[in-house]
Image 1 (tube, rainbow, N blue to C red):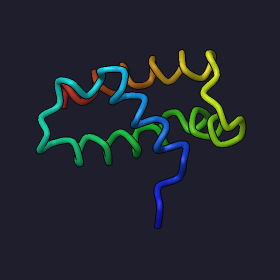
Image 2: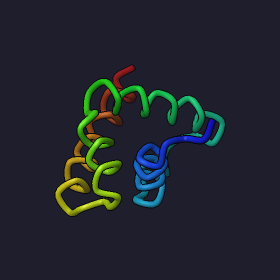
Image 3: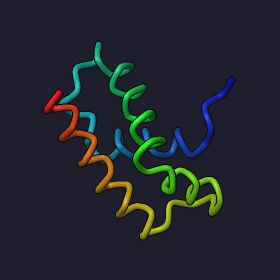
Image 4: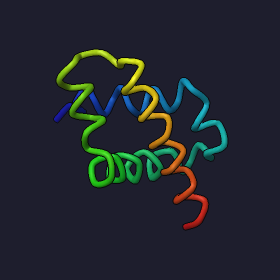
Length: 78
């Protein structure tokens, strides 16, 4: 089954914005899976906004950035 577009947008945004630059290539799959679980459980409104609006608004982009940074901190602590 294809990945929902909102999940694609979120992980591609993280990659394009440099948030994955410090993740080892062999760990990208695990990082992505954990990222999607985190977004679904902690910030479901972001994916819902992307799916509903069909764009990444400035407001959604700002909360997505904050969520990615929050996730990266939890990953470093793990």
